[in-house]
Length: 184
Image 1 (tube, rainbow, N blue to C red):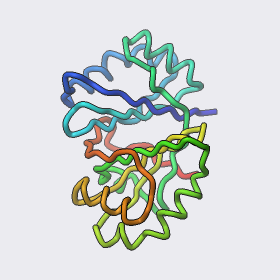
Image 2 (cartoon, rainbow, N blue to C red):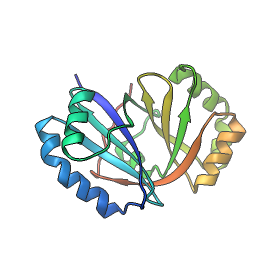
Image 3 (cartoon, helix red, strand yellow):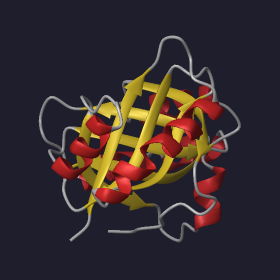
């Protein structure tokens, strides 16, 4: 059984895309040994934040591989990938804004989806399109990917629709040219 894992990291000083790719090359041996697959990373355009998507037999295999590769796995969490209906790998490549959501209590994906569906006009009026969600297994963390003209359009659409969010930031996708396309 495959486990999807997400790693959130912050960097000071900022990373460049070449730095991310060098980390991937450096970790490849340990990742292969522990059967950890790096799907892609979302590097903030300022280089200070990054979210990486992995799959592995289990979270501990990923932690071991990361520790052996000198990668901080403090903010590694297990979750699910949930795509918008009819999303293709090409659509995923168009995503450019990440929205962070954190919850005190457990929430269902459907609860948040219902709020966003009710505010669909807010997204459409700002040309914001939902692409993918990384939903934590503990149901208290969610990262959502959108394709939008800019980050402020996404923030405004979220506020107007009444969808809770902690932050939104622009990113660039680094890694394979065809990310994993999974729906649950």
